[in-house]
Image 1 (cartoon, rainbow, N blue to C red):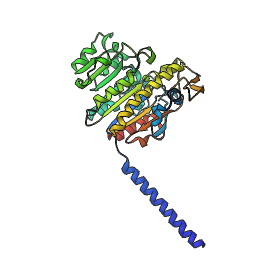
Image 2: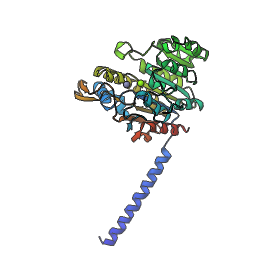
Image 3: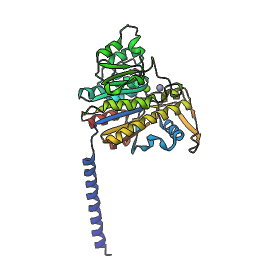
Image 4: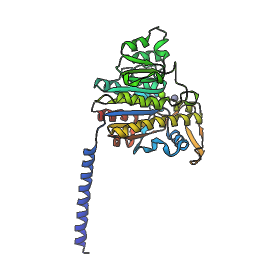
Length: 363
Ligand code: MG
Ligand code: ZN
């Protein structure tokens, strides 16, 4: 081949490559569909070791590995290298970093509107599901505003300031046996909520607004009587929320993965990750059929500094060591599937999750 021919071939190849790259990025843009519904699932304290503990124990049916898009999330809060769940939830709910212990107020104490409140304003349905008290930091971050996450009675009051369609978790006493003797259960009834103390009491086709307060405080752990409350609640929430033609926003939390970490109890972590993953299975079943739902699974932070020191993928046995009884500063994984999920690959700040969801909703 002459050098001139080589040059021509080279130029042809270069122009062909640039044309295909351009048309590829154009088709990507055209294909970028927006979701009608967004489901944000937070495994509290769920780092990569916790995820892999669940995978090892549950095996090939582990749902978190079915997500086509994965990324990494930086979790630090405004005032600390290591976040708490209040600042973590605030980042996901409002797109702003705040101080540890704060719930959807900025470091100066100013109220920040949450994605759930914004979704309500736009006529979407909204819901919160947790295995802690529903007034605990993570769910609270989506609906309440306070610089003291410990004040769960104030947080309960905030549930009546937003027209949330359903919430399921523990925390009955924060609505009913309060220091100020207010009866917020009566207020919920006046606002049209069906108030349930047991999932079995809910005849979902007749329920439009639901307040399911299934324990006086936090729910027990799976093996202490909670059983499949989280997967069942997730399924029920979807049946109610999907009625809205405009769409919905739902946050589901596996609250107690964190508590297994604080206790340095690997069995507790394992049980809670598997339970959370079972709930993910119910959500995926819905989303894959619905095709208009974006599902995001992530964590607010890692807890315990868990290292896996041994295991067996055949028997599901896994052993590990914790270096710490509190949260750690390491990045956490994010998994996404559905319309808009491609935005969740690569590296991001925890506040970016909110920004991506808001832009996908078109708010
Ligand atoms: Mg939590
Ligand atoms: Zn914690």
